[in-house]
View: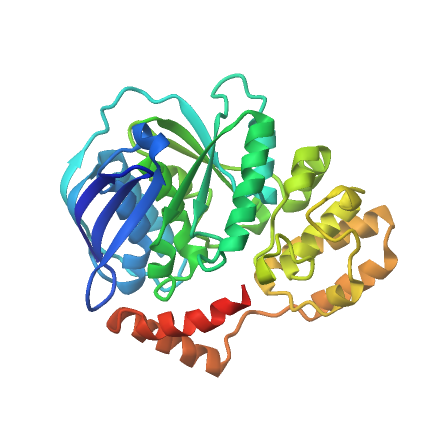
Amino acid sequence: MQIRNIQLSIDDKFVTLSAICKIRRIGEDVVYFRFDKKDEDYIFSDASPFAAALLMPSMKQGEDLIIHGSISEALYHGMQQIMGIMLEWNIGLHPISIKVDTIVKDIQEDPTTVATFFSGGVDSFYTFLKHKKDTTDKLTHFLLVDGYDIDPRNTDLWKSTLANVEQVARTEGIKLITAKSNIHQLLNPILAWGYAHGGCLAAIALCLRRKLGKVYIPSSHAPSEELPWGSHPLTDHLWGTEKLTFVNDGADVTRLERVKREIAKSPVALAHLRVCHMNVRGTYNCSRCDKCLRTMISLKITGTLDQAKTFSPTIDEDLVSKLSIEEHVAIFHEENLAELKQLQIESTLQKALETSLRNAVVTKPSFLSVVSQRVLYLDHVYNHGRVYKVASKAVGKKF
């Protein structure tokens, strides 16, 4: 993969850092990271964000990462370590060479701003609430990205998410920086977002490192639950530069403990929590999918489900019993079940969970799914995604 022609452009509304990137086999794309003009002073213009975003996809393709531009020396060495760690995961990645025109040290004045990625979910609320009272390295900024965990076609959900995060920021006296990027769509047919998102999160902060000095990346898993993942305690800190530090935060506690320690005690979190990945017709939390239901059960355990304004106040136990739980998330349901049993509450909900856990499955794609993914991949890398663009318009109607 190649990165060239890094440009910083500014208009009346936005400041955009872009590069021409050869990601597909045929043709090139303009990859961009866009920010509000009010945040112009934060932007650091070099190839570092694009290098971070494309490292793992390059390893997936087995292609050297060729960078026509400059990147941070610390980041370059960190990426070498990340590559070694990821190769040990045995997830189909290949060793590659990182070839850079210029490697330089960041020499700007020491930035002091401390930020956290904040989507409004359990992990990001936990990190914020845990650190909001820090007296040193006081957390002052949220980072929210359009085009990462929300389908870019689902504009209604983005608007409601933005409104809720803005409300949290106002209530808590935190500054919000929003970003938008097209990198997810360009990488998705090549590398699953669960693997790609770590470098892409780092890319956002690397764009802003003229003023950002420390950035928290809320952890997805506790140590006993760790698995190969794009954001990981072993790799997140290695995306840093001479002036920017990344911290993988929250890996010391389980998802249920995060709810018990912070979320259940925070009226702001209970009023604005967003976890849903289904978001049917723009709903904030559908209260029916795996992620919603396991969060609702955790809230039920803490006695705060009726206070959680973004969820249904009741749990459909029939839905719980019929959940198709994938093996890699079964641990979240198991800890909920263990807590329900210890507290000796909700016996029928316990039985529903036991039923669904007995049917927990290792994710094995069907033959049709494999074929469709291959068609999508070939369309993406050789046909510039034209078939996908036509099909996505029809699929997008569900939003």
